[in-house]
Image (cartoon, rainbow, N blue to C red):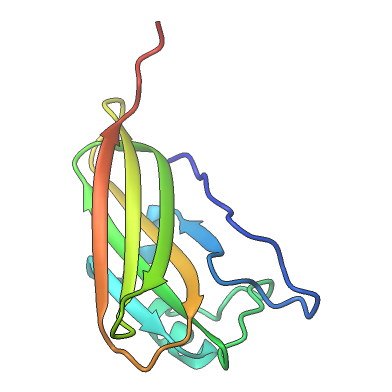
Amino acid sequence: MVVAVMLTACHDDDSVSVGKVWVYYGYEVSRLDDGAYIIKSKEEYRQVMGTPMPGDWNIDFGKTTLVIAKGTVNQGISGIKAEGNLGDDGEYIVNVTLTLNLTMPIETWGIAIVMPRSSSSDVTLNVSHVNASRPE
């Protein structure tokens, strides 16, 4: 799987910005069911993922939330892009675009995105697929 997405830089306080995206390799999210997970603390991350949060993920959980999404596709993945925003009611909305190719078998994908903190416990996960262009 090709990993492709880093959206923002860090603030002066070294906490990561809203919109920051990390892409997981399939084995890193294999314990999760397909879907989206709202993470509001390092302890919740450990409970969901089964491992501590990476040390360089300096997330200010007082101001932001981490949303993790996982899925499976029937083709290989050559790229992943993700973005998130809050709906009018504070619902988390995550849009993931997978660039697919025909060179690999079934593949698992996962992303984590930093979003503004909301009291909502709802996530809308929109996943779209595009085919990788063939070289001419």
